[in-house]
Image 1 (tube, one colour):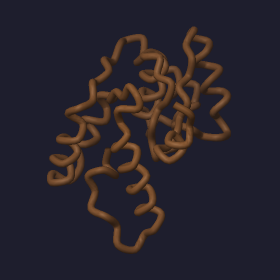
Image 2: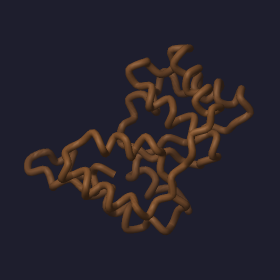
Image 3: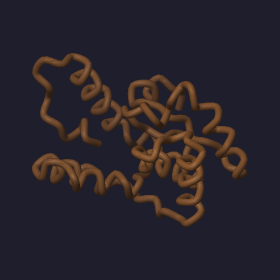
Image 4: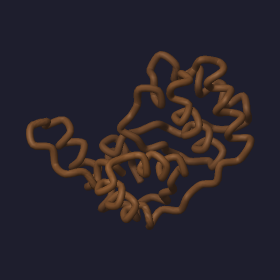
Length: 148
């Protein structure tokens, strides 16, 4: 959501490309059933007040997913098993929420912990061990390439 409300970067073509791809995805929002993690709202609130206001306006169209004790438990286990670092505990909750709410995709540009190549299969195995299917962690750019 941050890329939608951010001012266009002047000299960073990678950031500019991410912003453009995010806007293209947003313009096609109705192609998917999209939901919002409550954590995103908290992340927005911690940011620049002007940008936060623009982001809050954008997310009004998205339904927020509830956080269950079970999802918290799975997130805690992802951290306890060191599949997600303690410093990235919100990322573990994003993964757990996506699985508990049966999301096909978890959309993000931040793939450091959410789609760590070294840990991806172990994270998926743990989630499957809870009888859930892990969401595919994907960028807006890659999602636009997926068949609908």
